[in-house]
Picture 1: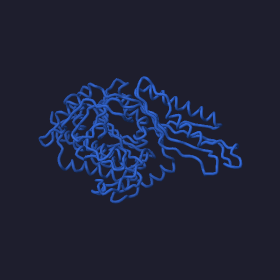
Picture 2: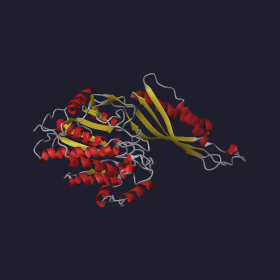
Picture 3: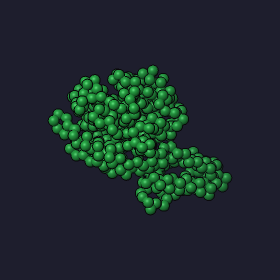
Picture 4: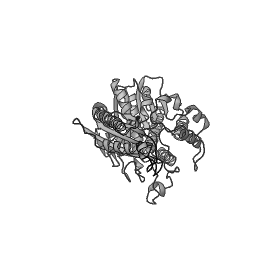
Length: 448
């Protein structure tokens, strides 16, 4: 039982079809109700028993939640058809109990083996309408204006589903078996690093975790990196200033200008001292405040982030940011609050595990040709990733973790309105994920 997964043309087409369905109906973090239900339906059709939403996480541990009004509205929308895509099944929405995400186990009676983590959320990006944009040209552009899978998570879900089907096919044909269990974790709210923290109990005590991404530092179809280094630790936070409104001409001295305080804080954050131990990043991405041109602003807020590698650089920048906000509030007679809306540490892929994954990748073929033309054991990235929270949990418990990159030609950069990837990566990724699962949790070598 040493046969490698065989990807049929029919399954390859299904994987692309899954990707395009997810692309047409994107949902942003913590609102992925239709996406979760669609995943549950597909996995249920495979004979599996997924657990959903509140069945797998503590709702109170979620970070950076949308308002209750938004959650209620999108929950209703998820149940409705959109285009030719049916609405989410009522039974799945009921089981979610207002939370998103999904977990399913293969061979749940076995000892813990491998967690395969996949992100599912989209971005608040308005997708391009250019005729040259392939989703427009081929009819799978987002049906939800202002939301888009602009980072490849639609492809991640399709690859993971394809990998599950490949593993189940191998088992059904008697070509492989699992000696350890495999957990598929479909994580909500990766963007803004908001979702992983609530799912930590689902990976605690597991000996191996795999995660990955299309593109990033490998914008080249046919390339593969078995692990990464250099991910930034990050803190995402919201700052609110509260002052006093007053007539801007008749009695400005009676006011306390919250918008002025926010603007001073934005400049102060960008002027934060850097740290000698490593690199740091600061970004204020959104600022709003005030009620009218002739009213001293009584309220202002902004959304910001700091990143650093190693962890202490991020911690230093976040502490200095909070101190700057507090000092500016005091100087301007304002009240201020800093709300943490997302957080992830840095994590490095394990060298031994990455080397093993690289050997697997080098041995893969499809239709008599190598699946990957270039295989790296490690690649360096300059992003933050919510998977690091789960990787650190596994590694600190004595296990191993690796974050893979699936190379793909890209139409534009990640998070751009005309982002798209080469769908040839989907079959390659599914084969790699299935092969890794069978190697790490299967009969060939169950030692992790």
